Image 1 (cartoon, rainbow, N blue to C red):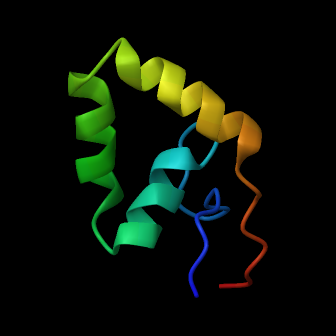
Image 2: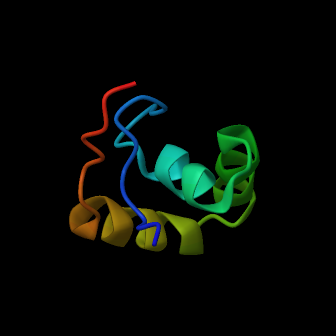
Image 3: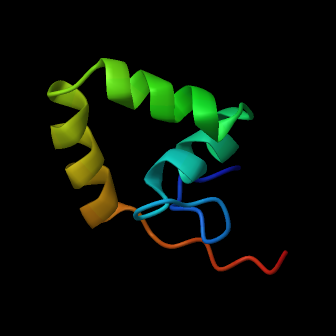
Length: 60
């Protein structure tokens, strides 16, 4: 079972968008655009996810 985690490889700030994109199997650019176009709600969601998600410790 896959688990939602922050990405340690695909990140710009905290790795949240990269982790969400990896979980859904899509491009992180699409997730970043969705977060951008849904501001201010996405800021709250991003901060919650950044504070609660575990860091992905996989070796690439």
